[in-house]
Length: 467
Image 1 (cartoon, rainbow, N blue to C red):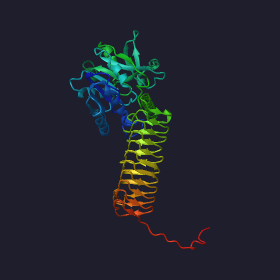
Image 2 (cartoon, helix red, strand yellow; image 1 turned 30 degrees about the vertical axis):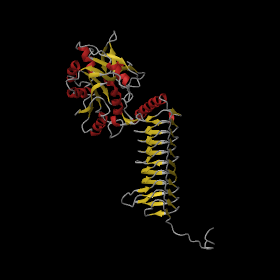
Image 3 (tube, helix red, strand yellow; image 1 turned 30 degrees about the horizontal axis):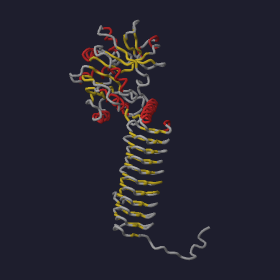
Image 4 (cartoon, helix red, strand yellow; image 1 turned 180 degrees about the horizontal axis):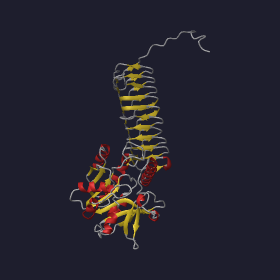
C-alpha cells in the first residue's frame, strides 16, 4: 500500500458496492470479481488506506454476505474502522448515499463518496479531491473523454461554474456532445448535502434517485457551486464486464511491475510476467518470462523465479532458484533449488539448501536442510531429515484407501531408486534402503533394509517369446 498521505479526521468514505453483476453474467457480485489478485472492492479500499480517514462505510445489497466478508477482511488492513450498511432497495446512487448518511456517526462532517468498481484509482487522486476547501459544499472528480458515451455530462455556465450533471439517458443531443464527464466521486459537506440527498426524487429515465442531482440542487438553492477536480481518465473508469476487468488487471500488473523494477527487481520481459499487486519481491531478484506470482506470495533477495513458474501463496527465500515449477502454499527456503517441472502442493516446506528436481511432487511435507529429492519422486505427508537423499522413483505411499499416513525419514538417510515407503513408516537416521524395496516396517538408524524378491533367472526360457 501507499504511504499515508495526510490525516482527515471527521471525514468518512462511503463506497457504493450494492450493484449487481448483470453485464458480467455472473452470480458473483461485481465488486468481488478479481483483478491482479484483489477484488475490485479491495482495490478501492486499498486506495483509501493511506488517506487517514476516520471511518469507511461500504453500502451493500441485501443477502450480500460474501461482500460483507470481503469488507471484514479489510478491516484489519485499514487504519479506519470499515463496516457495511445494507441498501434494501436498488433505487440508485442517491438512495445508497442516503442510507449511508443515516448510518454515519455524528462526528463525521465530511463524506468522500466513490463507487466500488474503480480499481485503477490511486490514493493521490482521492487526496486531490479531499484537498478541496472544506467550506465548499461539494467537490467532484471530472475528466474529458474523446468518447463520453454512457457517462453523465458536466454542464457549466458562461463563467465555467458547474451547474449540474445530466445522465446519458436524460441528456439531449447538444448535451451529449459535451466531453467533460462526471466520475461519480465526490467530497461533500454533510450538514449541507444530507438534507438535499434525503429529498432526492426519481423523476428521470431510470426511475432512480440520482446522486448527481445534488449538484444542480446546490446551485439552484444558492448553497454554492460544485468544484470540479480534474482526474486522469483511466483512473476513474469503472469495470462493467469481463473485457474491462481484463484491461484493468493488465494496468494494475504493469503498475506493480514498474514499482518492483524501480525497487531493484529485474523483470526480463514484463509483457509476459504476471505478478499480483500484493506480491512482495526483494532486491536483486530476477523474474524470467512466463512467471506467474499470485496471492500472498513473497520472494526474498537475490532469488531467481522462472521461466514458466507459477506460484500461489508461497514464500521463496533469499537466493532460491525456482525453475518451471507449479507451487501452491509452499515455503521454499534460502538457497533452495527447485525444478524444472516440480509440483509443490500445499503444506510443503523446503528448508535451506534443499534440492528438489525434475518431475518431483511434494505435499504436506517438510524436507530438511540440505536434503535432496532430485527427480521422479513423490513425497507426501512426510518428514525428511537434513541431508537425506531420496533417489529416483521413490514414493511415500501415504494413502490406504481410507486415510492418509505419514512417513518419517531420518537425517542423512539414503532411500534407493524405486523404493515404496508404505506409511506409516519410519526410516532412521543414516539408514540405507536398497533400490527397488517395498518398506512396510520401520528401519532402525544406520540399518540396511532390502525388501524385494530374490531374482530368478531361467536360462533359455525367453527363446521364441519375442519377435
